[in-house]
Image (cartoon, rainbow, N blue to C red):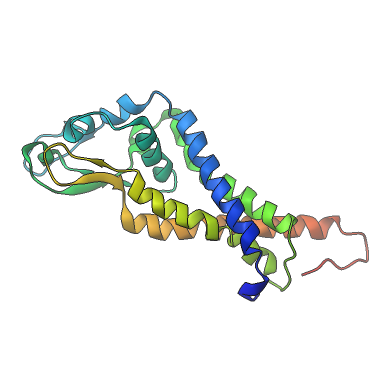
Length: 210
């Protein structure tokens, strides 16, 4: 399916909206959890483990902590300063804060896939998708709106260490790889589901558009 046949304007808008909805839901689901995030113990190389809030010098802003957890829900770890940062030493370690908190918050791992499947489904149900792989490609094209925002967020959701020149933020390489993989895979699945439903609902004897 040529790129010119993809509903990029529509899918980019849907992808951007889904990213915003996913973050908003995460903010609501993690309200009041900033203290728990700040209390997570981070190991050091030469220093004893210390709470993340102590390493940063203060608790992270709630919107930043929610951003970290939102990215963790995409399997993107949070790159945080090691405990040695309290002594002015650099160094980072990757950790899933969401997995550490656990409990009911594990449900957040389902949020990005479900939203992206719904996004791909919506795009295909409201656009022409010619070609044998048209529905899959059109669904996956939500990456055009989702990935740029997810990549931008990796630079926005940051908090610096108090005594060292390091920052806590979503891990960069994981943000790039998984920021592409999630919308391409789950958006594509949503597109194929929409295509199957369209084919199944076509009148008998009528061939649905490929």
